[in-house]
Image 1 (cartoon, chains in turn yellow, purple):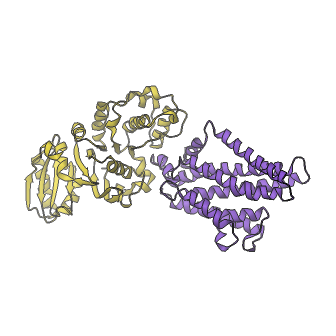
Image 2 (image 1 turned 180 degrees about the vertical axis):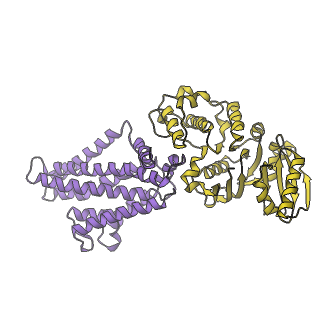
Length: 290
Length: 228
């Protein structure tokens, strides 16, 4: 199973921030698009953080071409690969990711067939991003899909196409989407986390995740170890642990509260870890989150 | 397609514009015009002045700077390469390919500038022109490649590749003197090869070896520094 980890990352306007993603749909939302853009660039291995690392199954993404091959992404600024036509550029990019795709098929699926024969350098910034989004959504074998603010392109790629494809891909891959709007995070579904001043705000993510998942507040002397173990278990959709905020508390999310508690107790018993308290999460009101 | 081929394709694509041939032709014509003016100014040193001061002292380094500005779209070379390396190819190989395209262009430009300068500064036909052309175009090729290597390496420094400006400034300030500080910079050795006052008493063979070694060294260091 794919593990994408942001390990104690500090960069311009970011962090320190540590996040773990497994397969599923995750939305990072917040008012600073610059912070979110930085996060996606670091996760995609396009640039290194000033401190900390982005790891895909233990390999540093920015230093490992094989890890990057497994990541399909939509970055804040995009430029297609040099080629005679958009269609050729998309085919070349797909081939580098180890997939044989027809450029015209990719474009047709996203409703962008009219761009197929144009030269990439004649396209504007929005168009280049829309075409990159079409490519990222089409790369079936990629284990990680990172999309930065894809809904800003709704004029070119319909929002529902992006949402449907993200949900579809989330069944087999780790899908991380950033958006400045909580409403879009809720619309997308999956787990959500608010990034504020470059750091995650755990409880704020609940409003978006409540539609699909329920949460438990867990108090334990071994909270950190427990968080690590939960992150590796498929029963937990999403685990939040912030050592500085509360060293003995973690939040776990899943589809069913009973199954979540059972899995947690089983894990604690097996690993001989203490569990001091378990309480169901009370979802905050949307107005409270905003 | 291999990583270095893709890197080379990226910068070649950026360098190849509708106006590029016109701009390059204008640069060659400028070299020729300056050489012609030197000849009109007279003196037996017209060819040397045109080559040492105008052609390889000003025109080639400036053309090199603008070539890399264009190839990197005014940014860093390593950032340029990341746009292709993100698809899962080796960043280092792509960097090398991306650097090679402008280096090859500068090598050819160095040869063309030298040929135009010699022809217009001496006049055609003239005695010993063929020998002079042979020697000057050879030096032009090495000068273009050396500046290309230094500019490629310095393009990875500074937020928007501002290392290029600093490299040219240091080359101008330190490379023009005959002090030890001028030793690593291409300018002093190119001048030496053209017959100017040698740096630290180096012979032309040594100057050539130092020029080659320093260019290869900075290129190697830059490749090693580039993230894979």
